[in-house]
Amino acid sequence: MPPATLASDLLPLPTGRGIPLRHGDFETLCEALDYAATAETGFNYFDGKARLKATLSYAELRARAVEMAKRLVPFAEKNARIGIAAVSTPEFAVMFFACQYAGLVAAPVPLPVTLGGRTSYERQLQRMADTGDFHALFCPESMEPIMRSALNDQAIPVVTFESAEDLPQGESLRPFDKDDLCYIQYSSGSSSSPKGIIGTQSSVCANCIGITKHGLKITETDRATSWLPLYHDMGLIGFMIAPMVSQLTVDFIDPQDFTRRPITWLQLISDHKGTLSYSPTFGYELCVRRWRADRALDLSRWRGAGIGGDMVRPEPLTEFQDLFADMGFSKGTFTPSYGLAETTLAATFAPLGQGLLKHTIDMARYTRTSEAIEASDLTREEDRRTFVACGKVLPDHEIEIRDFDDNVLGEKMVGRVCLRGPSVSPGYFQNTQATEASFSKDGWLDTGDAGYWLEDQLVVTGRFKDLILWHGRNIWPQDIEWAAQAAAPHRCGRACAFAIGGAGDEKDIMLLLECRTRDPKLLEEIHTAVTAAIRLEVGVPVRLMLVPKSTMIITSSGKLSRARVKTKFLDGTVVDLLAEEKLTLVADSGKTG
Image (cartoon, rainbow, N blue to C red; front, side, top):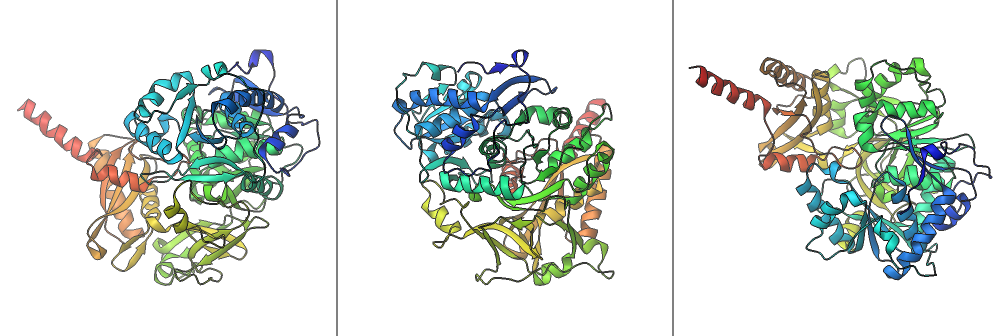
């Protein structure tokens, strides 16, 4: 593909559209881009030091997508699945929308660095290609060797973005209409075989209206900033498709650049007067850890700091809020929300300006009765747990909290979060069994999440599949993990709790805790402090293993994949830092003896 406009040739694309704002009231993405192409807005791409690398106006995006679509129409039959490496570059956007004009189903795939090793990545990519029955996979030239290696046994062509320009060009387009498919988005969860979630033109457009008109209430002065990966729904829908259908300019940085220099994210918001940006909780937490007070930031224009993709944890968010308050970040800026790829992206939004609506409950009663009752003066400190409300359901959508007999529950009763509405996917691609397990014939989706109503706002408490049953108690792994992290916040990173061993009361609870030190004395101190804290706060015995940084396996949305970490542990590939240090000491003593 020809290079996008270089930064030396053009300033960042503006906030002002130059045309009337439309909140995604289109029937297809092609119709939406046809309109957006008349605006002055589009995508800006920055490097890890906040320097502009390239721009892609919506007019240029449409022109290049149409040109590429004319090459794709002869290349593949309508509705063929096209894998696309979801790099944060103009080439991905062009290829994704070229598929829309060519009537091909785009299937964004993750990048090698996100899955922790080449072998693991190749297995994951093979499963995606099998699930989606790919006709071809497009990628940057730099990724061609690993893509070819992964798909070597499947006879799936790997085509670079550069060589795609040499495909024979036809004369006609074959755009999707309102009743057609749109894309396949792979679940970022822990299953060994990723599920391909179907996005249709109607479900995507419905969710974009919900996001832009009702959830975030996008205006003429809004501007988005994003580091989120484009193979996950929060990046793909929230910060590529939804901005396009509302003609909104987006400033992008690559997820890898964010991980290395998270403050660049805040710098872009400050420099370009960004108003809307999202992150899982860990992104805000990373900014707090990496802040060095070495620059001045102006975050006063940021009116919607969204939180999604994982459990909303109030403590690190409050730290972020307090740290950056002097730079214009206000308490009402945080916008918790709830959603999942099966609902395209968003299902609920907290009212703008509300901030973090916290609800502290008595966990002892919660585990006995499944009631989310407020903690009182009599509630023991270790039994207190604070959740954050994720807001109100989008218009034209319904949420019910149900028990396992499908009875609808009342306020503050914890149950299954079930959802219905025009944004809900029709199911999983070529996976009838998984579809029937999650989607009912009358349109309800069982999300697999546990939650309750706090007046008219949804509170999510965890995933039912992660629940640990121990001696008649329901133990949420998050409680164990958060207690561990709170006990040694400056020396430890991510934590992962899961059950191992026999059934019922014979199970053991295992906790892996990443540590930023290998000093034997400090490791012993951490082990003692964390074990005591969990006993006190959660009241269960755990087998604690201190492990190196980067041991955990994280999904594309930033969620901890407990099932895959457990598999890694059971495979014997997790390093026990304490055991390693003891072996080193023994070896050293043997040498000196």
